[in-house]
Image (tube, rainbow, N blue to C red; front, side, top):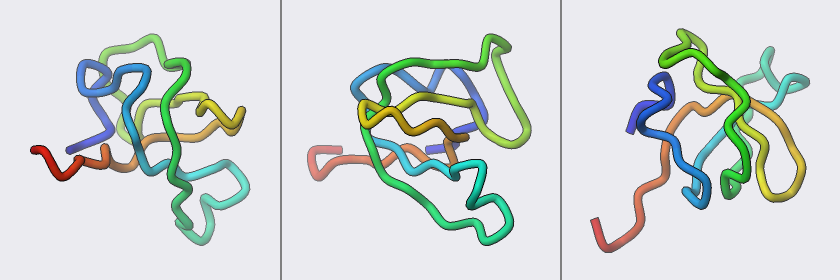
Length: 68
């Protein structure tokens, strides 16, 4: 699922994000969403979130579980 629309992102979801320091390489970090930091309904580079680990980055994709 696309990470550019705020309606797709909810606390508790598992997502892949790009951290600020990894923007050049595009390295993804997987984690669970704690807070949504982007207020607008969409963002071309992905909705900015804080993970439960405290890391902050932009969502590149929502990880879907085996039940979907």
